[in-house]
Amino acid sequence: MKFEKAIPVEEIAQKIGAKIIGDKTLMATGINEIHQVEAGDITFVDVEKYFSKSLKSAATIIILNKKTKCPKGKALLLCEEPFDSYNQLILEQRPVDPLRDSISPTAEIHPTAILEPNVVVGHHVKIGEYTHIQANVVIAEHCTIGKHVNIQSGCIIGTDAFYFKRTSQGYQKWRSGGRVIIEDHVDIGAACTINKGVSGDTVIGEGSKLDCQIHIGHDVKVGKRCLIAGQVGIGGNTELGNEVILYGQVGIVNNLKIGANAIVLAGAGVTKDLETGKTYFGSPAAETRTKFRELAALRHLPEFFAKYYE
Image 1 (tube, helix red, strand yellow):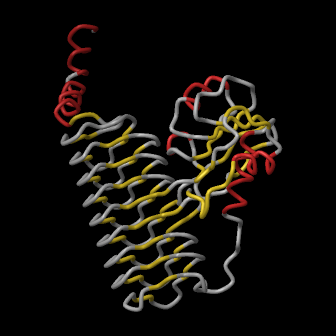
Image 2: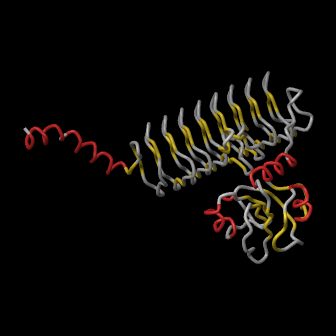
């Protein structure tokens, strides 16, 4: 998530009651999780084994809970509860603002866009020209919908990220400060749900086509011209390259990379990164030739046991 204007690190430290270690002249231009950060971003870490990863990341400002050496060109903000401080900053930039109208007065909707009855459009949404949104669709806050997009009935775009921090008191919800970006010429079937990013963006690439009842998790990046069939579920922070094809009921766990032009056959369960241009099947998914040989071998197991163990 990028800020509307840069914020001095000293101002941030004052807001969260933190001690600054390192360069006190820095300006923060955004805030994001460790796997999404860019130069100028704030991130946080509260587990010591991940300190090194955070300090070596692109983040300029790191909120943490133990004094450590600050890399050159960065600033560390030392406080007791880094997660709470991080969440506080997200809430300050994206305060919870319940919708009181079907279409927010802050939404920017192109005059050529078609919105059927009972469409709900949240705060600061942008909808491009010649986009057609069918009845009973919800477009939540800060989402951006491109040109010539078709969204069928019952979709919810911009649901909260399924993201909770486990504490001794239970699960603490993160404020979802990210967005959903639907690029041009995308088609989305009925009753799909697409989570907004935790503090980054969930992106559906130009020309991609989604069938009905698909769930896209937070911070997922779907490449251009992908084809995704019904009842597919994609876990948070997973990336699909261009022209990936996912057949019906494919499940993909979080934090994976699916190479461009990969094909995943129906019902597969994907638990690790997939290479470019190959076809996969099964659960856990493997290249089809390998998986079919395994299945053929399994069919001969009864004969094997009958021959050698009777």
